Length: 356
Image 1 (cartoon, rainbow, N blue to C red):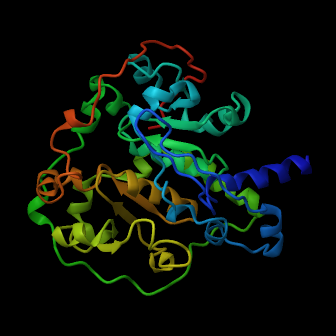
Image 2 (image 1 turned 135 degrees about the horizontal axis):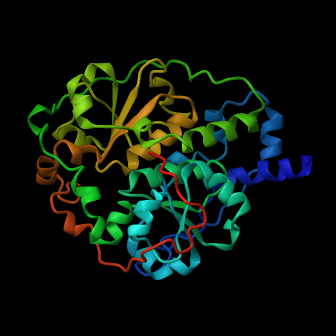
């Protein structure tokens, strides 16, 4: 039993310790990256400091949130040409899955996904694990948390099933809006002073890590997303974290926002401790994919964080597109394909009971 536990401890690092990238190969029709990593010995790391916090552990294990594959995204075209090599996990409800899904995909409830990976399949047989949801960000959220459990080849399908087939394009369209464009600000707030990390229940490190990952994967969308309507109604209730470049920030953001650079600023060694531990943190980016990956990381560490669904495109998409054509979404057809769908329960390994 102890041997198995220690083996598991060694494996959990694979999700976020790309310490030495040896090769990255990108291209349409091929796997978008092939990274070889030098792993760290978990046992020795924990034994050196039994009081290690989760934030310190993530940092000393390779600081996944600063890496090139954060957030862990994959595009529909990559799946089209490689799906026989990928483990496709569709976390939508059973009814949505049966309306149409990617051939070979398993329908797995979020509450069962860790068990599914441990007992129903052998993830090591697959080049990548791809999490598929309705519209994209939820899949990225789950994939990010899976990386902290050792599944370093986990990715979320960007824009979810909606990007695979136009039948589901409404999943994107319904989240786009320009209605708050007139209320945006161009001057941001300074970052707070350094404080403390959130307090988590004291328990053996591996128990804490497992508990935090499992608990946060199981959170329904209502606990990890917030609408732009709710934020603009009373923005002072929240710590507003603008997760993008200075160029985008100065063109317009939610009043009262504080800007942090993607992949750089919120490492344990940088400005993580400037985030409040007594206020809900609202993160937003272009389309929500970067933001929700950060939310997964922050929730793992104990912060109360949520993401604005579809980011700036949910409250100023037209205005955004004027300044940043590549980031603003005004035509959903540019994002969706007509790749084949399978209808029915095929390979419905675990019927999804709806995690929303």
